[in-house]
Image (spheres, chains in turn blue, red):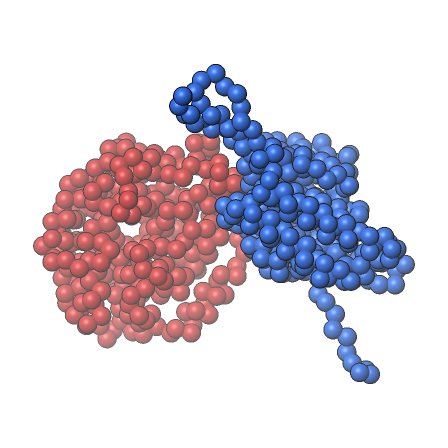
Amino acid sequence: MEGRLGVRKTYKLFIDGRFPRSESGRTFRYASRDGVVTVQLSEASRKDLRMAVRAARRAYPGWRARSGYNRGQILYRIAEMVEDRAETFIGQLALQATIGSARREVSEAIDLLIWYAGWCDKYQQVIGNMNPVAGPYFNISTPEPMGVVGVVAPGQPALLGLVGALAPVMVSGNAAVLLASSSQAIAAVTFAEAVATADVPPGVVNILTGSSAELAPWMAGHMDINALDLSGVPPESSPTLEEAASHNLKRIGRWDASDRNLNRIAAFTEIKTVWHPKGR
Amino acid sequence: MRSVGPTDEVMVEQRVATLSTRSIKGESKKWALRAAVTMTDLTTLEGMDTVGKVRQLSHKAIRPDPTDPSIPSVAAVCVYPNLVGVVSEVLRGSTVRVAAVSTYFPSGQAPLDMKVSETRRVVADGADEVDMVIDRGAFLSGDYRKVVDEIEAVREAAGDACLKVILETGELGSYDNVRKASMLAMAAGADFIKTSTGKVQPAATLAVTLVMLEAIRDFRAMTGRAVGMKPAGGISTAKQAIKWLVVLNETLGSDWMTPDRFRFGASSLLNDLLMQIKWLNTGRYQSADYFTKA
């Protein structure tokens, strides 16, 4: 159709299962590598962060109460939704990289989601333990989720860094508030749309685009966040954040974007040990 | 009753909508948060209330935040008649007053002599304040005489105790009725008029509060007597509380910005106030995990 007006997407935040603009009304500019394509995205403020944490705290009990099997199904469903939007992701990632590497990254991100989906009903058996004790008791240690986890995702690779940080947090039943770096912001918004259509309960995943440097200190100081993944924070700003995080003794984890292992799941769990009489 | 006059529904809602947008920041916010703490009637009105819970709540009323002794005590603890003795024992020697709901709260569907004897009993057990309910059935069927007679009888039974009259505005149907009931209650001797029991939705709305505050203003102009206001039910955040204080200040002025003339009936409001105060003091967003439940 000649002369048809373009319908362009408004890139917004993802809080409590909804897509609001930043309450501050701020936006920032995202430019492709060659400078041809520019996009305006919502720039989250600390109040948006506060709302996201509130939503995550509300969503957490329900998410942790789901069976591991059900959480696995839902993570798998996110993979399906990303697969369905693969061409969109490839186009967006290709703004910063070559088509070939963008294509590879999307496939890897989908596979990674499925890998973590599989862990949902298995991590407790593998990390947990039956401890030998002197007495007629079963002594069982089992990992449980910690609560609300703040994630500063590594900016590169854009989609893989985001998925690799978010999925392990969700596996055990934590709720997440994720700060996407400005380099991955477009893919982060599209990923949020995949999450929103994957039966993830509202509030379990919240994704904020904007300046991590501005928001990470508020996240580190927030008393209602139980743990932090600081993988996307440059080493020089880490000590200040860790000091702020110490007020409520937040657990802190940091990994390379390519790390995929059980430790990333275990890091955001707390071990519960129970004694049970076993008779003779 | 004809002299009471009607309310303007559209004006009331427009006015509260305008006042709700007002932004209170910095030192004013700090002042408002502390004032709201001192105006809180810390309330528990549940069938499952126990002596232990009420005792804890009373201690919390005296010192709301154990980690910050600069936080003032609340105005009162409000409980069912059965628990008045427990509360007054804990609160003895403190500035916190004992409030009891009475007159077969929340329905008020009981013969007058039972309401009167219940009121005498809670006052004898140590209640400084009595929160009574009006007979909404009588009010709605136009039997204003009965409503007034009951309030006067309870007023007498309460003696020196402060009498708060609950209108249960959620059941009255219109702002005109709210204004009418406010005037009846004040004329019959109420020290405070109170929106709701907390058992009926909608409970305290900002609009209904404005209607009642204007009734208080007009009653003062007619008779010279100053009556207090207590919104109760549904006010659970500091942000809401500040909106109520704005409407109060704009309608009745600073003379009413005191626990002697304004109270919040609330249970979860106090913790949100404490969390906001701590956030202002530390610059860190707070978690409910670090504040006592009762």
